[in-house]
Each structure stands twice: as C-alpha cells, then as structure tokens.
Image (cartoon, rainbow, N blue to C red):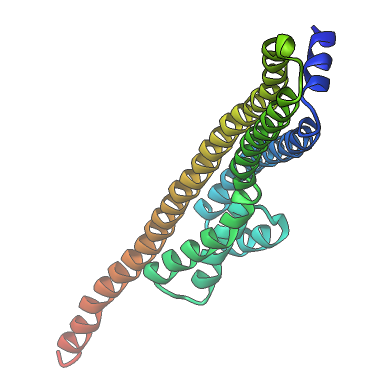
Length: 235
C-alpha cells in the first residue's frame, strides 16, 4: 500500500509537492487548534466552577483576584463584569462588560481555524491546475508522436495528469471536515460563555437582591420605633 501511494505521488508530477506542503500545514493548524480548544474547554469549566463558588459565598474580592491571576478566557470575561461590580455599577453595565469580555476572547478561540477552509480550496485548485498543465503537456507530446502510439500515450498521460486532481481532493476533503469539527467546537465554547454569563448575572442579582431586601426590612422595622417614641414621650 505504501509503495502504491509513493508511486501515485511520484507519477503526479511537480504539483504533488505544493499540495503536500499545503496538506502538512493544514494538519499542523488542525492539531494545534484541536489541542488548544480542548484545553480551553477544560480550563474554562474549572475556572467557572471555582468562580461560581466564590461568588456564591460573596467572596467578590477573591473572585476578582482569581480572574486576574488565571488568565483563561472564562476568567477574563467574568473579570470584566466583576470590575464593574466593584465600581458599584448596575446589572446592565455588568452585562455589557461581560459581553465586551466575550468579544475580547473570541479572536483567540477562532484564531487560525479559517485557514483550514482556505488551505482546502488551495489544495483543490492546485490539483486542478496540475491536471490542466499535465493535459496540455500530454496533448503537445501526442501531436508529435507516432500515430500508432497516440492512443496509448494519450491515455497514459491523462492518467498521470489526473493524479494531481485526485491528490488535491484527498487533501482538501479531510481539511474541510476538520474545519467543520473545529468550528462546532468553538461554537460550543462560545455558547458556554453565554450560559456562564447569565448564571453569574443571576447569582450577583440574587445576592444584591437579598442584601437590599434585608436593608429594606431593617428600615421598615426601625420606622415604627421612631414613630412610637414621640407618641409616648408626652405622657
């Protein structure tokens, strides 16, 4: 099988080499992106669980310090919101801040993924170009050949020229599939950011709501005492 692949590659002509280079670059990009996105998914989940516990315990200062030390995409997004909370801004400003944090980290998640689609198109076009140039050379050679050998020579030349198209497609199809896989993985991470942002906002709102409710109850309980004192003093 290896000998067949080597012979197939050798018979394809010069354009087999640039297609092979494009394929190698695509595989390197695909492996790097897959490893990065997989690591980010695990890190973001770990940081969200940690920050969720700290915010639930109202340890907002510790949570803010954790976001600054972690440096993960999830910590960066939540850190934007906690900074606004530290300035005593409202829910709407905190939500805008976390959206800004999401926009800040998205380029890191989508980085180089689009290269795979471009490399797949380049591999296909190089294969077609190699086939066309091979056919031109074949017809030129057949024109000056012996009439008895024209048919066999032409079929052999066309077979060799078509190797570049086949190799280009064999390189492009896996890269397109990997590109789709990485795009789906990226979208899942972005969706997890949006869900995490909503959970953090609700958690912060519940905490501030409980606090304001306690203050309101305290003020309501103090009001009758203040009213009762003047009423009883004249007696």
